[in-house]
Each structure stands twice: as structure tokens, then as C-alpha cells.
Length: 192
Image (cartoon, rainbow, N blue to C red; front, side, top):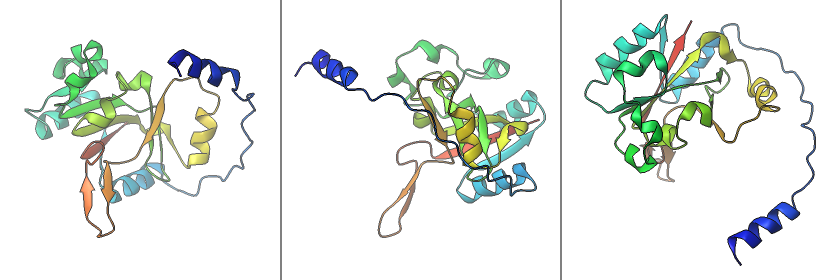
């Protein structure tokens, strides 16, 4: 069956859209959202760096990631990382040591950060870099996934993902592998 026939059949049999269900407001059980986010992310292998300015992010990156290929689409960090990658072949990103991207918001409950293709530059970016760094406004940390669901439910985007910590997998023999299908490490820059 040709691609066109398959897509036509899918379009013809597409279910009608239904409104999102109302969800219960579970409130905020955390007295300090930043502390909860930090606790969870560090427990699952990530690093949290609280900063007051973009200059502090630059200093941290220069200290910890010197010599690595860096990419970003964030204007305040443009002078320290490559910019041409945004229009290059995604396969050319296979040697990125550090990708610095913006997170729309984060969730204290599980340290997940919401990133859409608008922030990714290229869809592959947060998954192919050796280290992923996400910049998140402290004021954009939500208590629970229920709050995140309410925030993204009616939004328009082509692709988005919740990213929480470095990629990891373990087998039945309890052998943990970091970076199996994504970054080996993750840094969250929490900025005021």
C-alpha cells in the first residue's frame, strides 16, 4: 500500500476530538518548590545549579565543559556556543558535548522539564548531546504533573517532551547504564 493511501485512510478514520477531562486540583504539598525539584533531580542523577544571571551560566559552562562542542539557541549564550547547527543536518550533531536549551517549565514532583520543538532547535538535540543543560525560571516550577497537564493541555505545539534527568536504563541483573538512549548527564540551571 502506498504512503498516500495509508495517510488518506488514517485521515478518513480519524476520531472526533473530545475535550480534555477536568482533573482534580491536588494542591501543592511542597513548602519549597525549588528544594523539591533539586532533591528529585539530584536523586535521579542530574545536577542543579542555581544562578542569578546568564553570566553565571557562562562561567559554570566554561569551568565544567571547556573543550566540548557546545550548541545553544539561547541569545544570551550565543557567543560561547555554535549557532549554525540550527540549519545543519541533524546527523552532524552526533558529537555535541553540551546542548544548552530553555525549558518552558519544570515540575517539582518528579523534576520533569517541559521542552517543545520550539526550544529544541532540532528535535534530536536534547537526546543526542552527551550532556543536556536546561535553563528554567525558578518561578516556572510547578508543584505536580497535574499542574503541568493543565498548562500544556490546550497549547499548540507539534512535538514536546518531559525530560527528567540523564538517560538511563537497567537490566534484570541490576546493571545501570547512563546515556543508553540519550544524554549521559543533565544540568538544570535555575535562574531567578
